[in-house]
Amino acid sequence: MKKFLIVGLGNIGAKYENTRHNIGFKVLDHFAKKEDLTFETLKLGDLTTFKLKGRTFIFLKPSTYMNLSGKAVLYWLTKEKIPLENLLVITDDLNLPFGSIRLKTKGSDGGHNGLKDIQDKLNTTKYNRFRFGISDAFSKGRQVDYVLGDWNDEEIAKLDERLEQSCELIKSFALSGVSNTMNSFNGK
Image 1 (cartoon, rainbow, N blue to C red):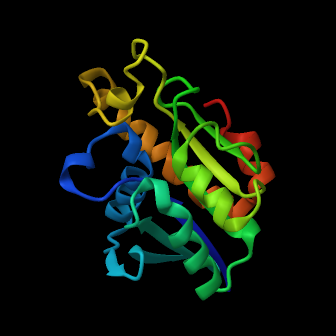
Image 2 (image 1 turned 45 degrees about the horizontal axis):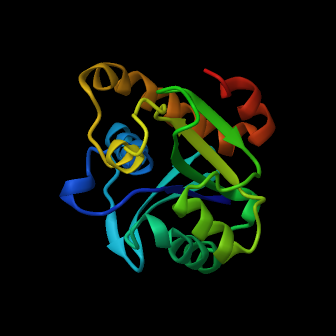
C-alpha cells in the first residue's frame, strides 16, 4: 500500500484558528470533516489517516508552530518510511489571488518561514507544495497583520468551494500523480 504524507501548515491555538496563515490546517480539517476522520495528538503534531484505492494518506498538522514545521515533517516522513515524492505540503501564498491553487514540485520558500524550515530540515527544495492563494490585499508594512488576520466576509463566502477543490486536489495527487494533478488543478 502506497503511503502519502499530507502536511497542512499552520499555528496551533485558538487565536490562529481562522487566520489566512492557517489555511493548511483548514484544508485538512475540511477533508477530515467530510470523511468523518478524527485527529489524534501524537509526537510533533495532530495526525489522522485515510485510505482510498490502495493508498494511505497520513494527514499531519504540526504542533511546532509554523516557523519550525520542518522538524515534524522530517520526523513523520522518516517514521512512516514515506518517500519524498509522496510528501505534499499545503501552505498559504501571498503571491496568488485569493482561492487560486497551485501545485509545484520544487521551488524557493518565497519568504515563507514554514517552507524555509522544511527546506532546511529536508535539505532540498524539491518537494511537492500546494500553494493556496490568500492574495496580497494589504497596505505597505501590514503583511504580518494580514497573514495572521481572520478571513473577511467575502473570502468566507467563497472558502467552502475552494476547500472542496483542495480536497479533490489531495486525492488526485495520490491517485493520479503530481503531473496529472498539476494539469488538472493549477490556476483554477
